[in-house]
Length: 454
Image (cartoon, one colour):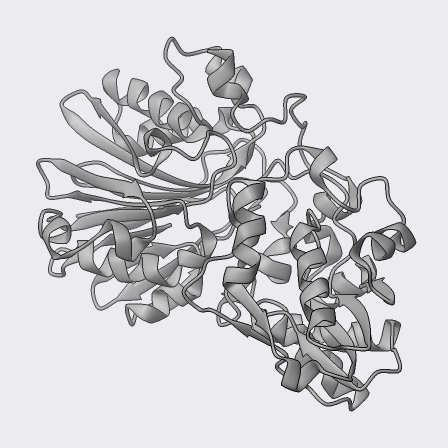
């Protein structure tokens, strides 16, 4: 997500640039909403940022406020109707909302509404719009309904003259505040601030609502109780860009420390260290540095292909592997290889990668993963709600190694992963790795169950 309040700047184009920097967080659809003091205009479509927007569409988005979104579907199917920002009309004004995360009480909230829509983001927008319809300002409306939301929600919201940023009380998903001259910027990661030359000011705190208007910047805390921070540990493992700063920590540095720790925990007698691009690169660098083994780029990435883990369908993930990566026989032939990756979720991508490395002539393939086994579904913003799709669920490491056809397999231990972040362990959500959830979790895990229940 990206949001900006800037009376003297081209907010739509700045939002477009910000979304470019955040493309790694979602590749199914993109959208921008702009407000000019009288009207709110929304343009969104399926596809990547560069596919959705051009000079014509950006020229039609004018105003001193804008928010943008790139979507990775968790609740609600991958369809145009679920593209964001979500728009509602209320009390003579337009309201647009962009959401990163996933509510865990979606069905409970849907039961309150005559038309809940097809996603948790729809529900939040509708509830806010109903409060505005009853005469509340946008900040008042958000503050009134936000305590009813349970789960992960970092939000940017606008009406014709106000920009609001909100982060859930646990802080599951990141949200940062920046300054560009006299403009205020809200974004999911600091890399989006960098691309528009905005200066990082601070993180928006868990449970905090920031309001930007003609009066300037205000901070409010609408939740009755403050919770223990639960920032998603997978932000450090996979989701975030390596050049971002999160909770005061450089993502690349954290991932490199994971690799160093993995080398200490699980060394192996091989010839070369090969990373799985892109998110496995820092850990592989750390592993090679700690062992003294040669670091070799044995896999070449097509940089014009997206991230296979966040493709909405398994068939697309499988097809995307060979489009995305190709092995180099000249580097791998006759070599004993330790292949370093950040995680294994469903396993199909990894199995194909191992096969590619063997086809390229590697005599041994040893797999090292810079995070623990992903055994539990996530209900806070990753599309892994069905435990049956998780390779490590109910399987031993030896069984996983046999399935992947590797000579050996080791995962980074959880305590080592937490130590690599440099943060207090109790402030990180490890639900997907430990099965310990901070909130009640839904019994229905299908991401399109909300649509089917209507």
